[in-house]
Length: 375
Ligand SMILES: NC(=O)c1ccc[n+]([C@@H]2O[C@H](COP(=O)([O-])OP(=O)(O)OC[C@H]3O[C@@H](n4cnc5c(N)ncnc54)[C@H](OP(=O)(O)O)[C@@H]3O)[C@@H](O)[C@H]2O)c1
Image (cartoon, rainbow, N blue to C red):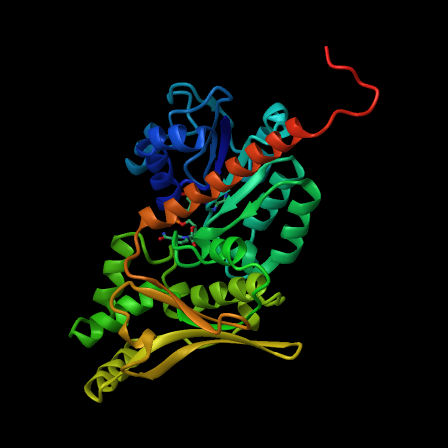
């Protein structure tokens, strides 16, 4: 079963995703009967490319890494799309992919930059994709943090999937885990360390590094957001908290309605003092449902040494879920990399392929309408 992929955003995550698709091609075919070809790529400053027969996405990624544009006739096999906005480009590509969309084999992969003010244009991209009959996968927290309910409703109405495992803790299952393995369990709250950059900075400062040096390291490896203030000021963690609360607790939060404090060089000094006193300072994200009210907060917290969150080093993340039937349990991410985020996109794609196959099988096994004779 071949899926056509439209990549909106072709930065660190999407480029690692296309490399991973290639690396895992054999196992995807063998174990999931899944083939995927990239038919379009849209970026903000590096041009767009569209070729219905499939592009060589790995070569396009190399071009971008060399600082070149992909929306050029010089790129073999791609058609020039000029200065179209990514939204217009997406609409046209989806409209021209009607056959794949009707067969539920069109997937838009949204990995544009996080917009902390409104979650745009990612939310518009996703609405347009669903309206055109595509499934959507995203690693961009904005749409889930700002518009989860309406996007989930739009996906339901369209009979398509809207999946976003990569938005929190990269490829470590959080949303999948709750959706697929916890029937009837209610999540009533959570607390966690969900931003790798700030945990790395706090740990590095405890070990004597400077704030700027530690932040520069996270930027160099592509883990920090394009605008690093989103990490250090706590916005990224607030967006993840809103996303988690919206999906797991049924809240209607946005990053702005999450109470928020980030970290600074001064917080680093507090982390050193806490460590000397046998405690750890961590940027903790938490939300809880009390009756009909859901409150959420991101702030540095001093934790006792035996707290699970206190043991997190470097880029490690963890999320402790409080539930009604299973009480508390934790999901721990001991390393974080682009590969893990790219894997989240891959695992969402496999979920969609599984769905499409199951739907096809159930159509085939449905009894024929009375009166119809088999030939
Ligand atoms: N990096 C991580 O480890 C990580 C982990 C989890 C989640 N995420 C999320 O995943 C998303 C992508 O992250 P990244 O590290 O790949 O970011 P990135 O390297 O900055 O890439 C962003 C991509 O989006 C494109 N873009 C931005 N605005 C656009 C628009 N309006 N229309 C079309 N394309 C647009 C950029 O194009 P130009 O390059 O031409 O500007 C670039 O190709 C972000 O939302 C981020 O929060 C990242």
